[in-house]
Length: 441
Image (tube, rainbow, N blue to C red; front, side, top):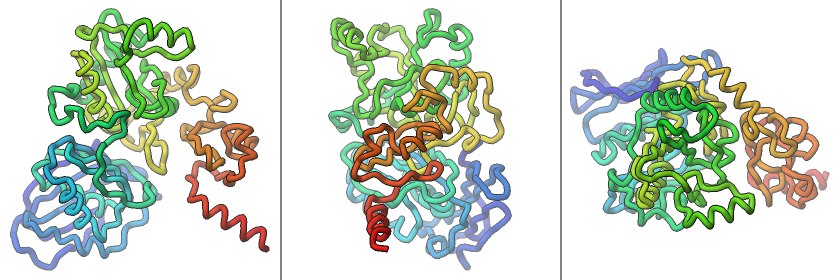
């Protein structure tokens, strides 16, 4: 179970990790300090149980993070941090400069985007560095109550830090700068994970065979990509017929005639095309919540009245409720690619009944090549650099196709070696240079 708490203490700056502590300053200008606590599951070589991270910082404007920057990070103490916030930022370029200045010297890798509509961040680093940035950010009134989500990592999950101004905090066809994201009434109503669980349990008890329910009149909408659904989703959610959020088009189908035409062509119809916009509850979910917040404003403009999103997304749900009504793993957009529910909450057991049912379903956890059961709930990239398709694959097809997604890719000129396990490929020049050196020997 994760969450922030704070209290005032009359002690020097300190950072306590497990049973270890280190003084961060010899003297303090102010006698009182606020201690921020965050509990999260950290993967440890010796003990996989959750540990508590405590970060104590002065109420003064000086953050005294120089010693944090200079300290050697713990080798097994890396975390991935995710948060976003839609809030008006008058001078986003200046905001970017402030963040770059603070992060200078901190061991932070990831993507942090800022513009007039707010901030969207996913980054990795040693916990001391990662939470120092969070604590500094929360001192700004605009971000004081931001929902911060964490997950364990064996090291950096991103190759480098990208912190810059970006016109769109998420990629969507046509951009999102014109959307009323700063108006809470135009976004969907956020449902706490506990309430979301109750709704799913009630709905699934009434109807376990269909995504729509005549009595409760709801639709469970997965606002992610199809390949994310393939390794994990809520029970009862249909697979999204998109491979990129940019092309998501739920609820925007123009006419019934167009829908009929698409069905005749073998294209999946829009799940929201024939629902009652005033009476149907649309329950939307995604990984961390930002895609739902963005897309709900589009649906609101299309006339949908009863829009609800899972607060904090699936990652927050797994941390607080465990994998109840959740099937499989959660896809992550970093080098880890996939995390089991136990990475977020080790205190709960996976619902084995639902998991068995899911593995027998038509599309879930199937090899993209031969349609057999995938060897693991984690994607891999095609060995053909010019394809680079992210796909699920069984162990036999990995060997037969030499890490490629199809036979044509096995004869591609820029084919990379088969990676053991589920590692991520490096830059092409690494493999090119290795081949040149091998030929020279």
